Image 1: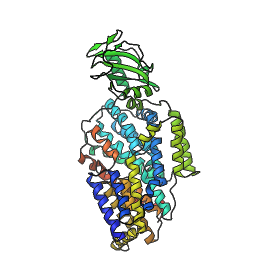
Image 2: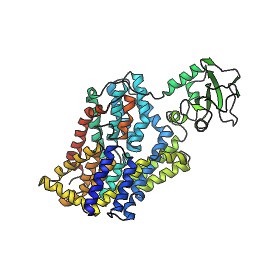
Image 3: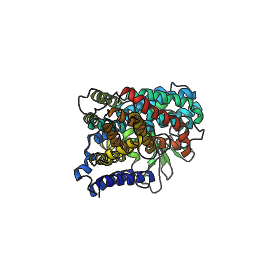
Amino acid sequence: MDPVAATLAILGLAVAAFVSNRVPIAVVAIGVALALFFTGVLTLPEALAGFGDPTVLFIAALFVVSEALDSTGVTAWAGQRVIGRAGTGRRSLIAVISLLVAAVTALISINGAVAALLPLVVVVAARAGQPSSKLLMPLAFAASAGSLLLLTGTPVNILVSELAADAGGREFGFFEFALVGIPVLLGTVVILLLGGRLLPERPGGLMPVDLARHARMLRQQYSLTLDTGTLLGPTSGVTEVVVPPRSALIGQRVYAGMTTPDGDLVVLAGRRGDEHLAGTEFVLQAGDALLLQGTWDDLSRRAREPGMLAVDDPALLRRSVPLGPGAKRAIGVLLAMIVLLATGVVPAAIAALLAACALVLTRTVSVPQASHAISWTTVVLIAGMIPLSTAFISTGTADLVAGWMLSLLGDAGPQVALLTLGLLTVVLGQLISNVATVLIVAPIAIAVAQTLDVSVQPFMMGLAVAGAAAFLTPIATPANLMVMEPAGYRFGDYWRLGLPLVLFFLAMAVLYVPLVWPF
C-alpha cells in the first residue's frame, strides 16, 4: 500500500474513532502506532519511539509534581487565601477565580488545577449566595487560558516546543509562552466578566465537602466539644465509618476514648440511629456509626480495610486541608524544578524526573500515589500519536497536504495559511483531544512553513493558542466535562460563552502571535 495513502487512511480512521467515543482513547493511540507498523509505513522502532520520547517522560513526571501540590494541601491553601478575600460579588469572584486557576494551571496542568479548585469554588459560591453555574464555566475556561502562561501549563506547549526545534527552529523558553499567555488571559477575563448573561443559572449537582461546615456537623451529631482545628487539621483528622452487615466488628465492645487494637486510631464517639453512644460502653451492631480520629495516613489505610464503610473518604477530605504534611517540601521541589526549567541547566525531561524522584524520596508522595497520579491515558495518547506525526513527515504526507492547502490559498501569504491551520485546529479541538489535534496538524504546519520559507515559530505558537480554544462542547477538554455535573450544565450551554472566546483565541493566534514571533 502506498505510504501516503496508508498514512491518510490511518489518520481518517483515528479521527473517526476519537469522535465516536466508542473506543478508549488509549486504544486508538496504540492502534495508530500498530497500524503504522503493519502497513509498513514505519519500522518497529519508529512505531514505538513515542513511548521512549523525552516529552512523554516530562509530561508523566509533571503529573507527580501536580499530585504533590494537591495532596499536601498547597493548592487548597492558595485557593482559600485568594478566593476568601474576593468578597461575594459575582464579577469579583469570577475575576479572582480566573486569575487563581490560571496561575495554578501554569504550574500543574489544566485538569489538576480545575480538579483541585472545583470543590472550593462550589463552596465559595454557596457561601456567597451565587449559583455555581455562574462560576464553574469561567473556572474551566480560564484554566485553558492559563495553560499558555508557562511551558508546563499543558502537554501541547511541550509538544510544540519540541516540534519547533525538530523542524529547524528552536525550543520556546520556559517563560516565553507568557508573551502571548498574559494578553490571552487578560482578554479571557474581560470576556468572562462581560459575558455573565451568557452563563446559565441552574441548580448544581453534588456538593463537595465544606470542611468547616463538616466539622460543625460532626460536633453536633456526636455531641463533641472539640473545635474544628482539632477535628480536621494538617496532620490528623477524623472519619465517620458505618459497620456493615457481616462485619467482624459486630459484637465487639466499644467505648469513647478507646484505641483500636493497633493503637493508631481513637474512637471519639458512636451513634445508633438518633441515639448518642458517647460516654458509655456499647456492643457494636450492624448499622452503628463510629467517629474515629488519627493521622490522615492511618485513617486512609483503615478506611480501605474490610469490615467498615467510610462515609467520607479520608484521602479526599485531606486534600481540602490547607498546608498538610509535606507542603513545604512540595513547594521547595516545585521551585527547584522551575529554576532548572527556566535556566536550561538540564533538559526539561531531566528536570521534571528529578523533581518527581525527589518528591518520592522525601516521602512527600508515596510510590503508589505517584503511579496513580499519572494520567496514563494522556501518556499513552501522546506516545501513540507521535509516530503518526513522524509518518506524516517521513512519507511526505505533510508536504502533500501542505501543497494542496497552499494551492487553494494561492498567493495569500503565511498569515492566511496560519488562519486556515488555526481554524482546522479549533474545529478538531472541539471533538478530539487538543494533544491529538496538534500532533495531527503540526506536521502540516511545519511543511507549510518550510514551503513558504518562513519561520516555524509563529506556526507552532499559533497552534498552541488555537489548541487551547476548546470551549464549544463539554467533551472538548476533561476540565469542561469536570464542571458539567456540579454546575448542572447541559451540552448546549458551552457554545454561548465559548464562541466569543474561540474567536478571540483565533484572532490572537493569527494577528498577535506573528507580531511577537515574526514569519
